Image (tube, rainbow, N blue to C red; front, side, top):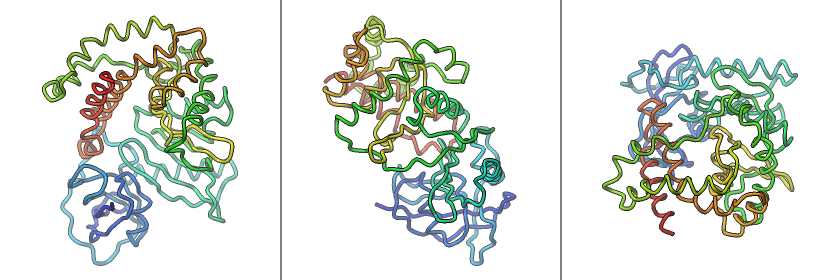
Length: 375
C-alpha cells in the first residue's frame, strides 16, 4: 500500500505559493513526513493535513507544507489558510520555524551544535524531528505536542528520576509543548513474545509503586486523572449500531466497584503501553511516548499490553498485596471504553481538517469493548 501526495506550499511567512504535482510515497501512514520529504524534490517542512480522500492509511492525501524555495512550475492552489483556534502551534509556518530555532538554540547551549534536522512525523498528536550529527548518526529528537499532551516532558523527567534509563532523557523542555530528548537506539518490539512483555511490565512496576503514594506530585506536574464521566454522551450515537453497548454501560458502575474492591492504588499509568512504544537495543529497552499518561489504576497498562494469561499472571504477582489479576480481568472491556473516551477528547481538541485521522476510532473502541466483555 502507498499514498499519493499533493503538497500545497507556503513560504516561511505563510504566503501561499501554489502546489506541486501529485507524487507517490511508498509509506502509507499519513502522519509519516520522512517519505513525503524524500519524494518532494525540494526542501519542505510538512505542516498539517488538508484533505484525505479516504480513511488512513493510503489514498490521496493533501498536506500544507512550507518551503524556503520558490520552485518553478507550481500548479494553482485553492485552499483556506485562515487560522483555527485549535490548530497546533507547529502546524503553522511560523510555529514550525520557531520550534526548529528553539531546538537549535537549546542544542547549542549544551554543546551539540552543527546538527541537521530531519522531519519524521507531523499530525494532530505530535511533530517530530530527528537531529543527526555530521556523520549522520542520530543524536537527539525534537518532539512537539498539543496542549493536551503538554505534561509529557515532566512525566519523562519524573520517571527517569525513579528508574534512570527506562524512558528517554529530556535534554530541554520549552513552551508550546516542545521537548528535546536524547536519541534512543534500537527497534520497536511489535510482535514481542509474552516473556518480553512481562519483562516490560515488571520494569514499570517499581515506578508505579513509587508514584502510588505521590499522586499529588503527578497532579502538580499536570498529569490528568483518568475519567470515564463522558462515556454516556460519547456512546449515545453508537447505541443503535452496537448491540450490547447499552448493557455494558449499565453494568459499568458495578464493574468499577468490583475493581475498587481489588485494592490497587491509583498511580502513574502510561496510557498507551503497547510494544510499538518499547524500543529495545540489545538487552536494554526504553518505554517511549508518554503523552497519554494519566493517573489511574495500574492494571490499565497491563490490559493495554494485551498479554496472554501468563503475562497478566506474571504482572499480578508484582502486586501481591492486592487482587491484581481480578482487577485486570474486570478492566479488559473498560480499557477499550477508556480508549473511546481518549479519542473523543482528541476530536474535541483538534481542528476539523485533522479529524480523518480518528474518524472511526471511537466506534471501533466501543465495539471492541463490547466484544471483550462477551469473552
